[in-house]
Image (cartoon, rainbow over all chains, first blue to last red):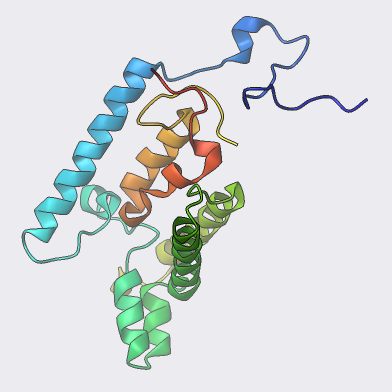
Length: 150
Length: 46
């Protein structure tokens, strides 16, 4: 007999034998989660507004705070020089700019298609994993590459 | 399928962590948790 993996309301069934107190390991209580979330949203909005008011694209918060490049640092510059045919320079600014651009375009196209059909906007979980892999690899390449391109 | 309790704005715990991480390392992708089922909460607060 195949066990049901989902309860009728769509929430995962608790595993048998696991104490009830351990099943819902909510490390972040809702009140703290709201505080963190709204603080993050405020930082996000403030950071973007600060740079956009100066007529500039906002850099990654990580780079602004630490001086170290973020995974997507150089993405825009990489695409701009790629448009001028400077492949080597583009790879220096961000080696995975093109794959990230393609993945971003794919995500946006899928969401647009869902929106046009009146369906729920939803990307598969594998997209998050793919973004994770791309960002990690891009970050490693960035940090191990020439500082001239930071 | 969405799963877990809502912690912030329709996101579950995983979604909130992904959101905060993306704010710091990749601002343009901050919207991703809201369109990925694994990051969305099934149990929304009334």
